[in-house]
Image (cartoon, rainbow, N blue to C red; front, side):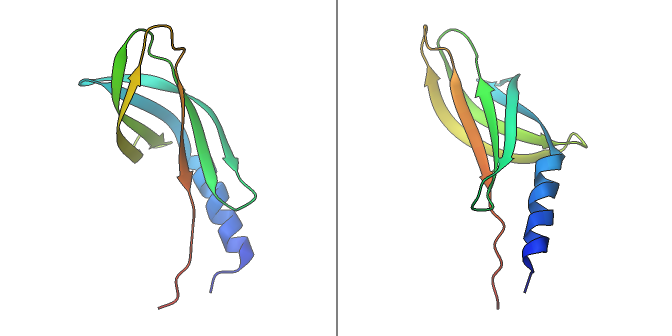
Length: 101
């Protein structure tokens, strides 16, 4: 069994490793603003990012990268942004759990 300190260390590791986000429209990637990475009281690590494409587009993928430039997480999506809409706040949640076998 993992002790509470192990979960805390793993959450802080995740928080430190995420450094960049991007999104895709059609087949073109654009940088997203990584606003914050927080550890919620539940122990979930939440990476918050802003996607502000401008104009009418459909975002079809959102990605997070680690400090080595490697893809860490992604989500295929279909988010429609209309003209006049500022953008969208998107987030990834990471929750470490332990299962006894």
